[in-house]
Amino acid sequence: MTSRAFLPYGRQDIDESDIAAVAEALRSDFLTTGPGVQAFEEAFAAAVEAPFAVACSNGTAALHLAMLGLGVGPGDRVAVPATTFLATANCVRFVDGEVIFTDVDPATGLMTPKTLAEALDRAGPGRLKAVIPVHLRGDVADLPGLGAVASASGAVLVEDAPHALGSTADFGQGPEPVGSGLRSSAATFSFHPVKTIATGEGGMITTRDPDLAARMRRLRSHGMERPAGGDPWLYEMREPGFNYRLPDILCALGQSQLKRLPQFAARRRDLAHRYAERLAPLAPVVRLADSPDWSRPVLHLLTVRIDFPATGRSRRAVVEAMGADGVGTQVHYIPVSAQPYYVARYGPPDLPGAASWYRSALSLPLFPAMADADVDRAVDALARALGLR
Image 1 (cartoon, rainbow, N blue to C red):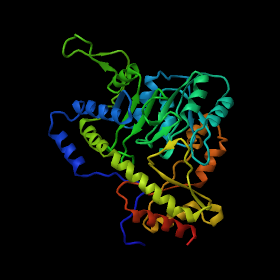
Image 2: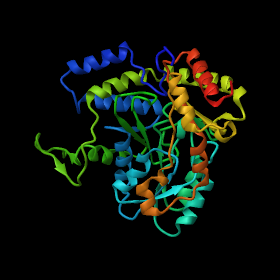
Image 3: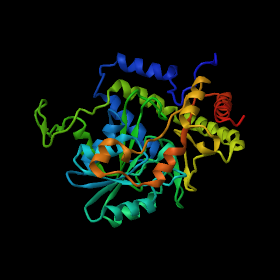
Image 4: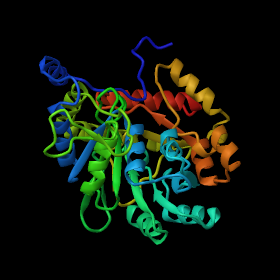
């Protein structure tokens, strides 16, 4: 057993400026629903070059609000990649919609126009309301291609982008920040501690549609709004909403973290480059997940694809050996379509790309506070666990 500190697969990076920002919020007149919320929203919108941003309590709430805001309801169908976290599909069920699971490219884990079209063909006739591509690991999905398939079916795109804050894409017209809304109706983000910026828990939705932004703001606070010119205490509710507000305290932390986004992004890119160099000798048994040509990611996850059968070692044995060596790992993700709830509802999935991705995927440590030597340590631990050294 190593005597060094355990190296987790992800961790927040909080410094004195973040602590000072939270302390200042604690000394203010507002702990929640104060000016800090709007300040964070405006700063975030500027960072991703979107006109509007709506803060909420977490990334799942962001997805739910997007579904509500777009009017997804009973019987509406929404296409979701099988390789994602549970929340991407669950947000459709929250509004009594039906999930169409798409396969993914086994080399990237991303939904593609081809896998989306195949899923729609399998699903047969029915109203498709939205498509939710996931920017897995931080790599950007093919938004123009997916948008064309979605539009032909009368659907809109909603980007599930918790992994991709700071990432950009170049589809031939120059860099486009993820979240800008140039190719989708909305994009959702999470500020969970292992994400690119952290607020503890927290989420954001960006959009270019002022009416959608206004509706989501109402829905995050019980559906309440104050009519212009009414009595100071007057509020009205035209439809029920939820308590999905993000407190000023957490917005203060988020705004401070957002100022450090360029630093975080640069460090993540440097670490990813070092991983690429150190992992190269382990090919073909170990390979980095592929990155599409148009994607300029700030990686949230450093995922490798491993030919476990070639090593004669199971993934569990490798994970346990690396843990004993002081290095944490994780698997992103078990296909949501294979979860008992969804199997009971839709039947066993036949999505070979997602199954292939799941069999080979392992996420290694990646967070800004890592030293270069931590990358070397993680790769060495992986090589030992696989019997390659």
